[in-house]
Amino acid sequence: MKNNLYLDLFNFNINSLKKVYVSKNEIYNQFMLYVFFSCNKNILLVVPTLNEATEIYNELKNYIEEVYLFPEDDFMTKKAIASSPEFLFMRANLLNKFSDDSKKIIIVHLNSFIKKIPDLNEYKTKKIKIKTGDKLNREELIKKLLEIGYKKESMVYDTSDFSVRGFVIDVFPINEEKPIRMEFFDDEIEKIKYFDTITQKTIKEINEIEICSIKDDFGSNNSTIRDYIGDGIVLFHNYHQLLNQEKMIKPQLKYLNIENEIVSVSNLVDKKKDIFIDTINNKDKDLSIEAKSIDNYNSNKELFLSDLLKNNAVIYSKNKQLNKEINKYNKTINIIEENLNHGFIYNRKYYYSEFD
Image 1: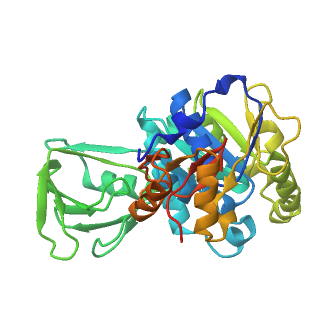
Image 2: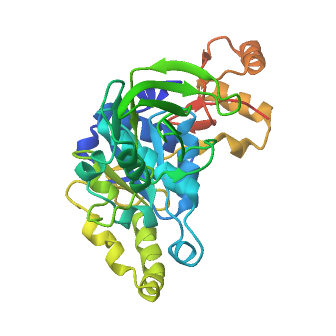
């Protein structure tokens, strides 16, 4: 975590909120961080479009590692052409991570939110766990690798590849940064090694390995990503836009005859538990968090400094030159170095990263 500014900004009980207005700038990121760290639960953020989901994901990734994008192709494109391998890897990588207890922020858009996926317990059974000394039929292992989405190639270069050469099977698991080599003696795993794809030389010998699935469809999909977060918190970003987006794709789903592969938004909402975030309308909200972006100064540094003095502002910055200039005006301004992604003004405090 690169900063804990959210602790200085907020002090509210997340369980008491249903409708929240948040400005769509840096304050939105800090709000999400506060929700995540204050509740210590999985967070599922549902937004209308993939572009919005990607933008929020990229913003939050600047602050924490525990944020994941769960993307899905446009249904028409997926049916007519092919699924994006990159999107599939991102989905599978996330689904595999639900085996541990670490808390996550998961960002989904309409298509990935309503998509049916395998049951979590079923997904956990798709992993292949191997230890040195295990008795394992090579043909059975090859069959399992194919079943969970790996492709048989002559050589292993990329994630999802595997190759077979006599008593040696190479695999590049989705959950590993390097491929592994398994050496058999008859039906016994004699050695497991990480190796380099270019030199083919051993990097490190290990005693066990877990090979995770690269698929998100095993033909028995009856769950959604919401089921994976347990007692986590679901936040809907601009819910009415999400519903409008769903109306737009309904003819597409009907034309493609895939209505049985998705779940309607209304069946995935719990209005007693879920939180609805609005970045457009601030009326009738339990909490309104409005912030002015630093961009409004249009690079007018003198006006910015003047407002700092006038408001007795607190400035969060890593811009040392700016800090020196502020000290020339008034040394009473509180300068706190933070690694902020953007600057913004909130409750008469100024939070700022760089001034162009």
